[in-house]
Length: 190
Ligand SMILES: [Fe+2]
Ligand SMILES: [Fe+2]
Image (cartoon, rainbow, N blue to C red; front, side, top):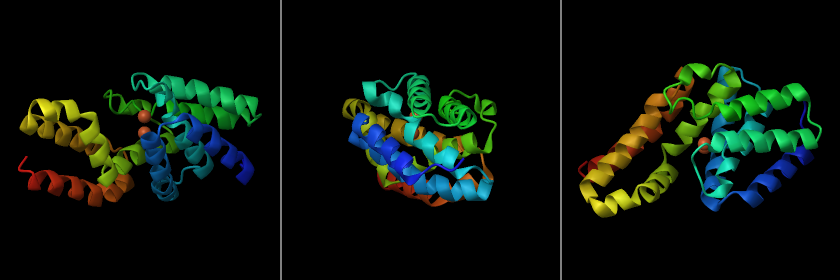
């Protein structure tokens, strides 16, 4: 289905108003990555883009746990209210609901090209300067408690993200970011 510029801008406005700045930045930076990967993986770019906009919206509560379920519900509610095509809604909601499956060792649940692209773009975007900022904030308490161990923990979480990538094309795209992260921690002697 062809989504109009106006429909897309309305979603952007809705999500941006609810998300914190860090997660909005993450969402925005994922979009060009996903667009490129969707081309390579022959995924539907509109489904991917709308799913990306909604995928972390469930974090608007400040809670990360189960955010994919909240994001899925919010996406469904919004898209149904705006009279989007039912098949389009199901595809978008599915992408959103499974985007954390890799992290729970259930990557096999991610089956459509669109869901794979969203999942991989989520990881690729975080192998970056942005990802370093985000993860150092997230694990700040560990670093305060034990500098060396906290940094090792942060590094390993970021490496795990790289290992979760499902597609060959995604892995290739993640390579420069992975190198950046590796070198960053190497300079810190961890
Ligand atoms: Fe997420
Ligand atoms: Fe995300």
